[in-house]
Structures are given as C-alpha cells and as structure tokens.
Amino acid sequence: MAKDYYKILDIPEFSTAEEIKSAYRHLARKWHPDIAGSSPDVIAKFKEINEAYEILSDRIKKADYDTARRFYSYAKSTSKNTESPKKETQQTKKQGFAFNWDDFISKKYREPKKETPKRGDDIYSDVEISVFEAAGGTTKIINMLQTQICPKCGGRKFVNASKCPYCKGKGETSTYKRFNVKIPAGIKDKSKIRLAGEGEKGTNGGANGDLYLTIHIKEPASYKTDGLNILKTIPVAPFEAVLGAEITIPTLKGNISFKIAPNTQSGQKIRLSGCGIVQNNKVGDMIVTVEIQIPKNLTQEEINLYKKLSEVSSGRVRE
Ligand SMILES: [Zn+2]
Image 1 (cartoon, protein in one colour):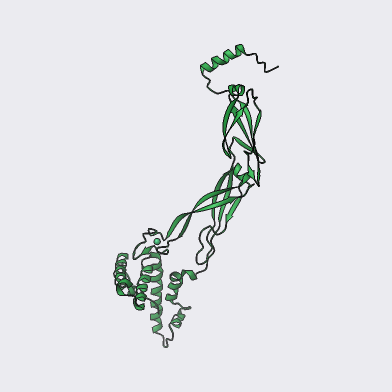
Image 2: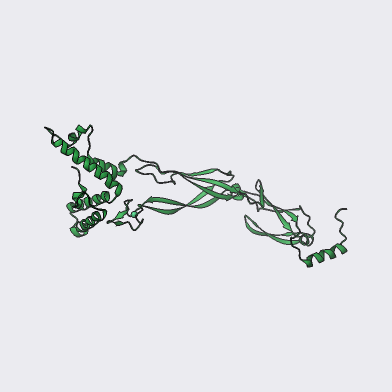
C-alpha cells in the first residue's frame, strides 16, 4: 500500500512550502512521543509524519514524488476500467511494466544504504620539505579539511522542520583532521605518499578514497648538500678575516657559534662536526666555506681607515 504524504500531513496537493512546513510543525508537536506517549502506534505515526516532511520539504524529492504519485493514481484509475483487476502490481502491467511508487520512494530516499556502494574520491595535497628533511627523513604534521555527513541531522538538513543548527542546513560538516606523516629518508622530489582510506568518505558502504601527498623539496639557495654533509658559504668582512671572529649560523641542531681564526683566507673551509644530515644512525658534518666580502655602502670613516691602511700596509698579496 502506497503512502500518501499529503494525506499524512493533512494538506492538499498544491500546498505551498510554508503550508507544508506549518502542517508538519503542528502534527510533529501533536504526535511527538514526549507528548503523545511512546506507544508503538504513536511512534509509527510520528515517523510517518517525519518521513512525509522529509520528502515534501525537499524541492527535488517532492517533484519526484509528485510525478510518481500522479502516475500511480493514473495507473490505478485506468486499471479500474478493466474487467478483472487482480493484484495491484498486475494492474500497472498494462503500461508495459510494473510500478509501485512506495518501492520507488523507498529505493530513492528511504534506504540509501541499500544503494550501490560508491567509493569515496581520492584527495590530493602537497607537502613542502627542506633538503635536509628529505635527506634525513622527517615527520610532518598535516591538517586536512574533511567533510562528513552531519551527525546531528544525518544529512537531512532539517531537524524538527527547522534548519539543522549543527550544520546550518548544509547536511554535512567539515573538520580538520591532523595527520603525522612519516616521510622516509632519501625521498625524491615530486614523490607521492599515499594514506589509504583518508580521502573522501565512501557512501552506502563503499570504501573511502585515499589521500595522496606530493612531496616538494625546496632547496634553500644558501645551502647545498653532499651526501650527509651540508655545504654553506658564509661571508666575512675583511677585518673579521684578518683579526678572527666568532660567527653564529643556523644548523639542523639549532644555532651554532664557531671561531674564525685570525688571518683566515677566502675559500678556507671549516668543518662543523656532527651538524649535517642524520640518517640511519649516521650523521654528516656542516662544511662552511669562508668568503671575504667587502660591505656595500662603506662609510666615509671606513674608507678613510682603508686609505690609512694602504699607506701603512706592508702586505704584499701578489708576491
Ligand atoms: Zn545537520
């Protein structure tokens, strides 16, 4: 027996959305188990009212339902003119196929879980890591926006004839999910890491999609790598090269200070032991190459001092 949702809500077929809503509110209050009691009859009635509203309050579902309902009434009325109507399902066979709109509505809306399982879509995202992290391996924290069916309204968008306050009538909610992504040592640029089942949720029991992360290795211009060693050139001022200096640079172990000996030449290398890339219980060094640079925008005072230096200098660099 097919359900007539208009009869259930006690309204004429061509009611407006407002009229449907108001009829539903009235009946939902009247038949609410908190008010009408929780006998099986009341619960069945209450469910029926909600079911009717679920279809009639949704523009698309309602259009489908109206079409099916008209077709059903037509099939029924034409079958009455035949001489020996037998069963309901046979009545409609004269149209060339059996049609039962209760089934139709059930299949379409009421039991979506019985529909064909559909696998969720894959999601693609990018992760940027440094050359050091690529060489030594690392763990990155990634936050991904994930969308799921609203737990409050179950995707129906409405709760008691009002927009679901939890999802604001969207039927789904989005939250950030945090992943600790382990990136193996020696990973190559543009490699993909797959997190199985972390893509879009599957529907009707279908498997979830996967999350694919593309690794982008950014190489800072001022650093190069050679195996586990990190190579870096550092500029020093002429007076630092002559007099010696203490210099602080960032390394994977944090900031490290080291001394430049007096009379250091341009191109001289300093090895900072254990400050390179760590991989498989091995650790490289940082190799610093000194490069003497003359500061730009020397002040007049500095230039005067260089003049004085040129007068008194005995240094013969070209000998
Ligand atoms: Zn909701």
